[in-house]
Amino acid sequence: MPYISPDTPVFRRLRDDGLLVRDARGKVAIGEWWNGYGAALDLLDPRALRWLSGELTRLRQEIGVDGFEFDGGEAPFYAALGCPDPQAYTVAWNRFGAGYRLNEFRDAWLAAGLPPAQRQRDKHHAWAGPDGLSSLIPSAGPGVGPYR
Image 1: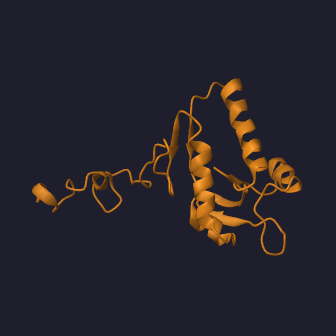
Image 2: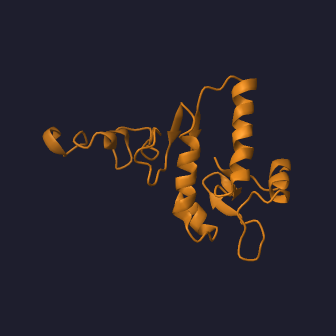
């Protein structure tokens, strides 16, 4: 995730280094997402991408991680932070993650020609319903297609 929990040592370091999105007043912008509140890496700043790349490299070397799920990075979160071109952050996130051989994304924008594995949005742990697993197969839902 390109989001950083506020009031942590990592947040303070990134804030002090100027690697987080700031609001119109110059303060670090804090937004709400499904897991609470967070600041966002400024994915348009090459220094922020270098920092994140270093962290992921460390995980690969120290723990042996093979790949990463590049969750988050969606334009609505960056829009809520006041970013003038929120889609640019999703594009930057996609381009960053595409550099990893094993990757998976929930959100992509202008990613044709890139090698990311993109998944559909989260699904409920049930077959039926508008967000159930049956929605993965358009003609498999009850009352749809040949399964009426």
